[in-house]
Picture 1 (tube, rainbow over the protein chains, first blue to last red):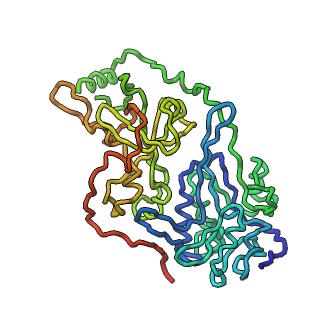
Picture 2 (cartoon, helix red, strand yellow):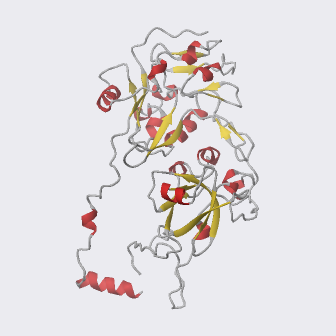
Picture 3 (tube, each protein chain N blue to C red):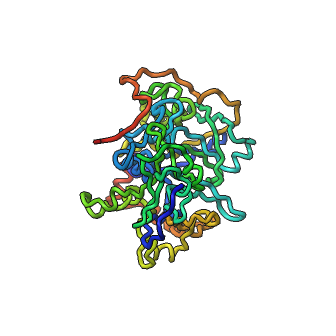
Length: 248
Length: 186
């Protein structure tokens, strides 16, 4: 079994905003695009153009519908990837030392040369965040784009995880959650960021920002009065244009 | 002709339900080359039905429905969506494929369980009596303006595949590899 490192002050991770995520899967696609071509074995696809396609993804979006007792039903899109837990059960269960947590920044990685593909870590992870690649036979997981965030060959603005870089809704944030003064820590503080299933004691580093309260579905839009016609009879050039176009 | 988009509500009592489509957001990111990934995200598209219509038709999970418009009919799988206007049904556009299209296997879910609303939308506007038929599309952009489609829906016994079930088209290109391990460089 594998030991966790001494507690790290730096805790790199993601903050994911469930209020603004629209479920577009841009993060899913950009994650697969970056990670199939870089760190470790490619993320393979089986029966890629066939009847039952499946493949390895490090990040997936699940969409749920919430039906509260009162008020309108809501759709919630929930992006899910490794949470880089402080007490990562996927690390301590690993029989070969392949699954490890970095002391310097807390990122949980897999050394694919030492991975025997036994799958114990995927069983141990309560979040379903690991996937055994069917072609390479090794465990794949979010690396927090470790090959981007320190990569001085990339422009500075690209030195963040691919999913964060691509999110068109600005719903994903990357930073040091061990630093109470970091932007991500402040965001978690302001918005009441949550741990996923904290009762399991895994102490996830990634945080989720809950959806803000929604309207109840019975309000009329404040812009509605502006939709009333303001001129019933048109004159001048626009009137002529209107009449001419009506004849076509 | 009105150069600005106009919308009018059909009041035909036989077709009381609005039917919409939208292209899946995921399809916008990489429409061309990464189909093997996107089809894992959206490989089938049920017809999403609001609670009122779901209960009126006594639909259950796994049921299928016949959807008809003045122009035609389709038979498709349905799914309940509570967060939906009670008079509107919708589905993802651009997932359903004719068999053989995109060089996919003929049993691909896009061809058996995926579908399009195109079969119940006429490409021409109704005759105006002037001998001309106008395209059922936006006069400026040419975009198909389909937000005026109204339909009727009824529960039917599930067919093996979506209907109409059109014979396979011949692919101009060969089939892709069975499995993919895409990696650039060493």
